[in-house]
Length: 207
Image (tube, rainbow, N blue to C red; front, side, top):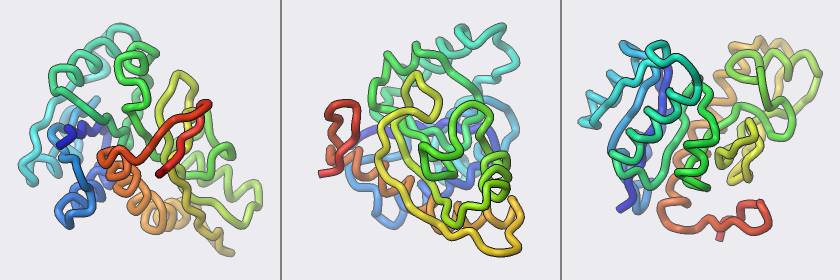
């Protein structure tokens, strides 16, 4: 059984999707063993506690720079014996230390179809604002491995979501979460725990 450690910074809707999927038996070969937050008093911690999952808070503001903060998070992940690290609305940038410690063992869900609308500055509502501004008719979500390149790791799963007339960034964000993020992330986590993802030539293949 693989240990899944989830990194959070806010409300934890993607964490909830993972918890619900685990309860339904949809995450095979893995169990959420710890939730680590970059901020105290966020609702994601409450979600974890209600479901009997241990929590840790490593406040970003207590560390002088990215390197010292990354070391603290990496040390915590090692202590928790993490087999898989899941970014679920984790809004804090970590450096290459954590990538080297957990190569192809960290995944993130991004609210667009990478390589569109991704990279530095594309997070949260900013992504959906850019999608609407561009006039594209399809958006979606991407689950990918985390590497040194922001949103640049191998793509595991993608799902398309229609852009509708009259959408606001908030409406589109909700549709992308419900129709793509909350379905794809648990599925990708299960595939990892079942050892069904292989990396070849920098690309992820699902067997």
